[in-house]
Length: 599
Image (cartoon, rainbow, N blue to C red; front, side, top):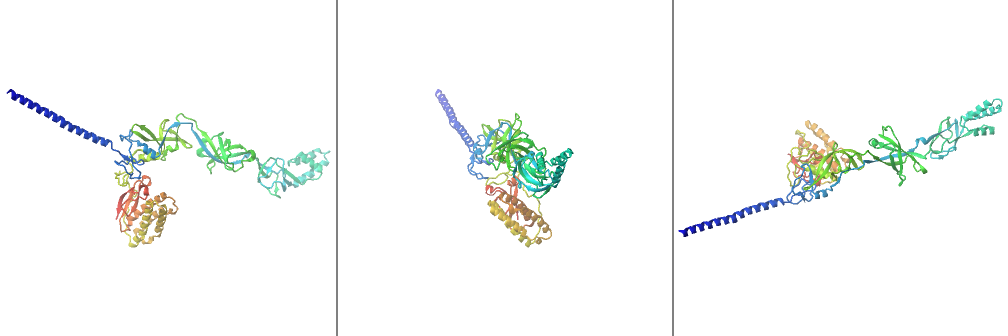
């Protein structure tokens, strides 16, 4: 009996030990295997590389390849956690920043100095311009100075005049001389009469000594200078006080600079001006502004800033062109922040910059509105929006903004952010379209109108040339696009309007007029961008013609690209369903989608 109990106990113990060992071996192994599988799977997921495009960061693929938008090689996404600290910021990898040539700088303060360039002319000093007149009425007998530009000295005889009045006055002097002992007052009056004609005492004494009337009298120069205008000719009769020459003293000259309205707040009296003259290369002159016009010329919209210059050696001549520079300094403020012009983007009503933020997860850029002050050459004063010490992008800002637009982040043209304009097929990559972004440009409802066979045949060459125009733009062929556009205009002009009768006549006149307006200047277009703008207008008219008259016996596809016309979207017609984009050509050949089929 005792033996049986022992056997039972041993059996039960063995069974228990076996179950325990089985659970430990198989159960633990299964659990551990399961945990290992989960860990291994998690590791594989966590270690999966995401590939993106440096220029189109919205592209995300699980394997390397080419960007379906621009064709560039995809690069690994250097973002371990794939998240940004600020959901409105645009993160960029170091590789993407290098490829986009993005450079940054730390904002600082400095003395606001603006370099203002001025253009002007050398002119005579108005205070040193004299009119040389004759004090004797009579006839010009001799002209000692016969041309402008000649230099005269003060006291030099410049003309000789015959004056009957002066001859009579001399005879009166001789008669008064005879009775000067009895009537000295009469003699003195006769001499004073001659002196009134600016004859000197010496000349009067010479006349008395000669005893005979002098018929020619010299006109002497009152000042030294250059004759700038000759006003009489030999034999002319002149009155007392009438000008004979205009004489300018060029020992000092004025340089009159044009100051435009926008620059007037910067230019002040006594500002120092450094200037050069084109005809004197290598020489630099300097002076101070001594006078500013109090009024603006109503025709040229400028005021004159006068700089007075000593003209040693007569090197500066009137009418010479001068180019000057004024370094204008504004009152310094404690918060004057200066940024380069390349850092600022304008929308017409707003100015924005991109502020850099560096964290453990990478580099990101955040758009910020700023208020700009005056321009300082290659930089701006920022009145508000930035503080000293912040780091901003100073080069490549358009690349950052493009990435923000495509990623639906706040950008220059879309400050609130939102879905990117990608509701179409870029190659083999399918993207969902937002109802607010994929909106056709041609919304007008066109009522079908019946036309006869002659009218349809007349329209077929028009459509053929339009399709040639489209194909030339697809191929980025400027010369072919210019030629086909001109041919399209010629085909349009050749259509006889009389073949359209009844209601169709009014429809044709309306749509053909729009097409002619779009094509009227096509022969003057020089760039493919201008031709694409014309093509967009022509396409709208051709789509309306197709809907109204349906002249072709085959299908026409109305295709649409929302990125054309500055992201406003544009349509075109094609006989093939496959997308071949005429608005971007090879750069975005498959950008677009079929919007409608006209049968």
